Image (cartoon, rainbow, N blue to C red; front, side):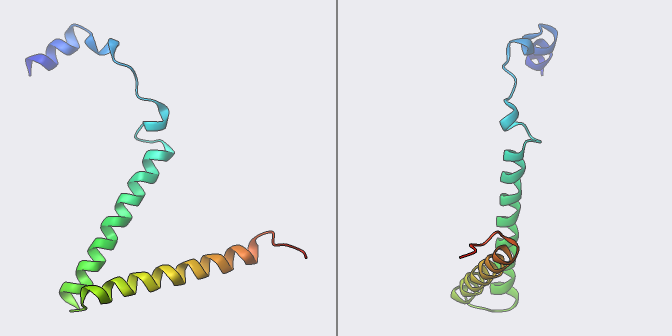
Length: 89
């Protein structure tokens, strides 16, 4: 506690380099990292629900997530092709 008070009263905080805008809490990079972390926690929660509450084996849960990944990639690919600038060959 006294170290913190001395840090403030002696103005030691002025000698600390500011955090780069790339690594600030509200930057795009940190927001994206946070979103990916939240997604991974949600996936873990759903996996636990599948295996513990529904009784699906672990390999079954992995298969569900694998199929969901394939189908979402298929849908995103079709949407991007429909709205994208495809080849006019």
